Image 1 (cartoon, protein in one colour):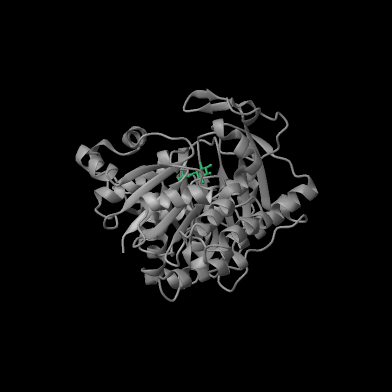
Image 2: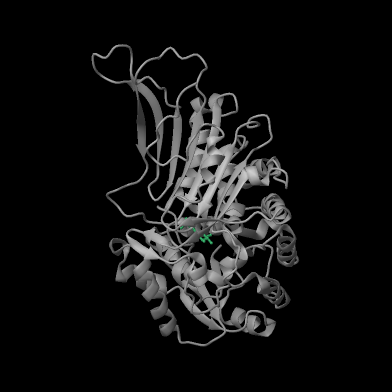
Length: 495
Ligand code: BG6
């Protein structure tokens, strides 16, 4: 069955910067559904030619020049139409439907618009008869800013679409390196006996960025690092790292296992929130030798900055999954803006046996570590101890590693996270999409952190832009004798 993709907010920022370039990748991979049509809608009118020109302008910036060809652009743009109209108005939608959609095609609707109008667009789609049991709806964060507001939004969507028709995007799940976690965990049997609290001492999940919030200030100030990144991306990565093996790779099995992880997260309350979390806000500093403003000094041409804002641009959290496999293993989550580098990785520290036969100079045993790099490079390295070559007395040790580079350095990547996710929507596969229960449970855990911060009036700690974050965040991991892994691990003295 062919597909009509209807993008509401079709000439907005998200659509132009992300969605069309990702769809173009499907075109060059010959992965577009047969006789696919893409209909972008917006309230203000424009000709199809002007619409194409706008899309092309963004596309050539986003796509690697080696992957761009006029021929592919022409076959791609041939599929794209522009429809003027107010998507909250059933009459306007009916007209668009008559002109552009085919009754024989599956209608996939992407809401690239603010959540506050999700409900009215869904109602309008329904009341003009465009929604069938085969139709699908794609939405993406922010899906609320608390459990309660998420449930309200979800209620609006569920009045028209069943859970099986809803595709909630977390773009981290579209990343190759994140999907590779499933392969690493469940296609390499030798890890399984080690993947638990008997052998793992602690885990660090880090997603850092060098960018600030700039023109997104007003949105970000209502959101902060915990809602923007932890509630979704970091918790999803944590789920894939920690979940039990699903019985199959289908959506129901994978999502059920992820949900169990979220349900097992140890609550953080006012009694332990200070010891288990650090909130930070960046102040003026240097990134790549360039001075950058602090969060409260950002220039936004659209909004006024609140000089007293207490929104966190950094957060570090000690989480724990209270189940048979993970109980007692601290899993540290850390994310922030304007830090010293952009990188995302998972570091798994394995325990060391208590008895150490290697004593003497240079004989500190490092922890065996598995480092899973998610971005910008993607790879896996296993850190092992080995003997330093030479005629030294005893057996001095060094930290070495086995490296698996997952990037193909000779070819540009022919798809991105969104193209993977579009591909799966068209195949009607929800495995890489987040269920309502997952989003709700993640909010529940995050909500109580906010409640605890509020109750204890826990302040943001300043950190210089370009630094590694607030000083106190170091103490979180020191509690288990570690530093935050920064690529140059140096063992803490063995005891
Ligand atoms: C988005 C957040 O979801 O993810 C942004 O809203 C953040 O604040 C972005 O910059 C990070 O995504 P990526 O793919 O660049 O790591």
